[in-house]
Length: 157
Length: 157
DNA sequence: TTTAATTATCTTAACCTTAAGATATTGGCT
DNA sequence: AGCCAATATCTTAAGGTTAAGATAATTAAA
Image (cartoon, rainbow over the protein chains, first blue to last red):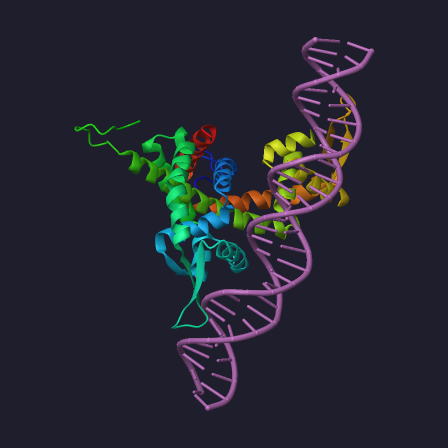
């Protein structure tokens, strides 16, 4: 794209190999940052008695109150099997309940219970705090930049 | 850190809540970018007959030839149990072999075999290509920026 | 030197995720 | 109406990860 094997070149010229190396480097750095971050975040969630997917399901419900199972999977990027598994566990603990949809009998809503909301009122602020402090390496400006770049990267996939 | 509840403030002032929201946003965007990226990369690896951790182990050996099991785990951020499991599979397929360390009998090296090297000579360039095209949403400059920011973020954790 | 602490690898059990497919429902088309 | 593709949820089996702890070797300390 940026350069062929022509002779002359500006100082910003890069070969395909260099571009690929940069892509690979970004891939590695992104993976490491994500894993380190997630590792800590998962420990945080577990310390509140919730597996990470359970936490994410409940987080969705905390903000949307009631939502079809299907859409939860789309939001947190897991398959329907995983949704069934996690919703089952949360329902057994009384943190949410299944509510059949009247208009479309294929659909089941998940709805957060009072107990679920109380739990999350407790732990959500702590969670945000914890994520925030993990991001301590970047200042406000840098976070904005990183967010933009990652959003753009994500769209390109 | 950046603002207390003082009255005056410059136009760049942000409240703690805003900072935390920015951190959370970055967390979400990072997670999504990673998942989308990894999803594709994993499919790529599987199409070459290697599970993702197997691929990563072999990638390390492709560049280092021989390395203690322990250090592989550190590099790709998985536990010793996972290393044993994956090294077993790769060894059974003849892509690497275990070599006991003579100086320290607790240590076992993994060493890539000729077959392993040949396989990777084939698939590594394709893999790099594939990663590179996934990064197509960002130009060269942006990749450099993103890499720097993520490295900084990672160090802060 | 014996003891204790650390380090490397392996084992096991529990847990979570996915892919594939079963079941049921809906909506569109003829 | 009857048929067919699409959609939503659940089931099952297989695969991969971790935490905890077992074993063995090394190092440091007493």
